[in-house]
Amino acid sequence: MGKNKLKKFTDINNFPNVIQPDYKSDIEDFKYKGRWNTGFFKNNNPLVLEIGCGKGEYAVNLAKNYPGKNFIGIDIKGDRIWHGAKKSLDTGLNNIAFLRIQAEKIEFFFDKNEASEIWLTFPDPQPRKTRIKKRLTSPQFLKRYQKILLPNSPVHLKTDNKNLFEYTREIIAQYNHKMYNNIEDLYNYTEDNIDPPVKNIQTYYEKSFIREGSKIYYLKFSLNTDNSLS
Image (cartoon, rainbow, N blue to C red; front, side, top):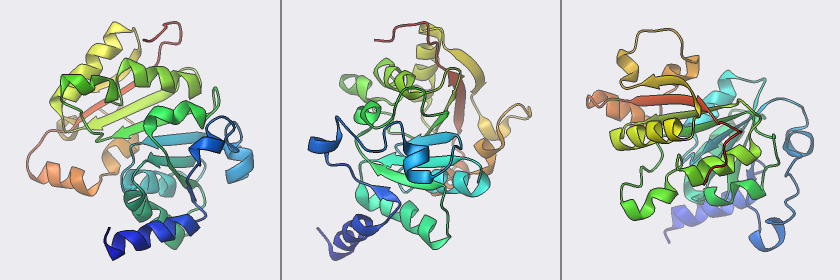
């Protein structure tokens, strides 16, 4: 491991806005589960998650633009989280935190109805059929989100991967989830029925995709709580 990477891991061990649970002791009794707002943020603002946040660009910009909400960027890669956590500290953002966990474990760290919104921004499309269950919009993951989201809360997907976009549309239809936006070419979409941060916030890689002429796909939907996902 390089010195720079080691320094980042040392840093995040001391960053007050980074939570790194000890799975052995925390997975069954995580101290902030059901208490993120009262225990960590010290307010009752809506809680928004970005799952697979990478360097946290999207979560940080959401926190800047929406001070009346609390944001948590979730990723397992500590050297990636470092970037968003440091920028948040340097700019004095107190409505954002970073949680270093595997996304598959998310229901152990949030209580029923605790989150009000989920963002999935350019997640790994997991193209191999053997890894379909790892897709962040698979039925397995949607079932996890169902456990922690308030009813009718939005889930956002932004991706440059057409296959992931089409797969997610099929899952939404198959399980009778409610679709709000179904956009095949976001930056050539002229209707005004999308949330402002969908276009106004762009990650470094998103800007690169746009310059290269790639389409950006976008879905907004909420989960059908009457269905049992499997």
